[in-house]
Amino acid sequence: MTLIAADFGKLGRSTLMSVASMLALAILAPVLVAALRADSIPAVKLNADQIAPRAIEELTGRNVTRDYAYAWRDLAAASESARADLLNDYFTGFAKDKLVRRIADQQKTGVRIRYIDHGHNVRALFYAPDGGEMQLVDNAQLEIEIRDGSKIIYREKVKRQYLVLMTPGADRWFVRSLDQMADHP
Image (cartoon, rainbow, N blue to C red; front, top):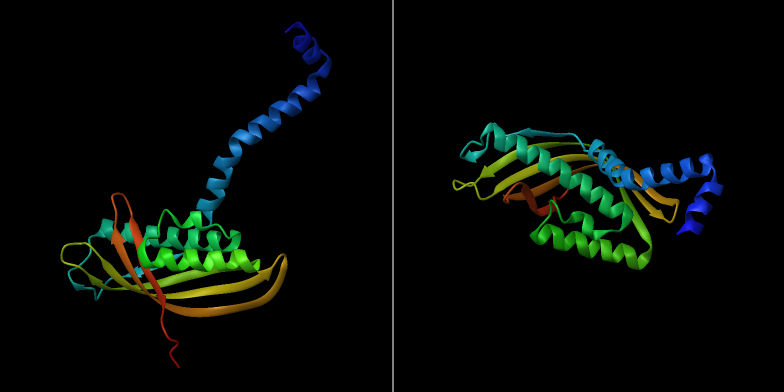
């Protein structure tokens, strides 16, 4: 024990400050990553003017909008890093299964897909009388990059339309189905 104390005495003030700084950075890194991730939430605008058979409450509309934005944030992060576990918070059912398979394929080939999200105009079509599901049409503006390592092998700005089914959970809405609709001329 005396030897350890003597060794610390020889380290000097600058070395101790460096060690303390690295320790603080290691502790704060997860907080910083979460903060940066929260800042990259895509813009989602929800129009529920013609929803049937029932209207949605203001709070429900805000929650669906927020959770759909978080789902796209997580989809982009999962695709770029090839980490299917990033889909766990906002995807379930068919949507999650399909995305997990796509990420597994990416891992096999070494190719990564990067989504640069330029926003979503979402129209609510159906809200079940019991509140158990909501169907949406999303007009998304995306930039898609396909990368092989650090090399971009394909890049395109696209407008895509998705048919979305969301269902409520205990504390959030989940994307249960996310299907790209056929392009319209």
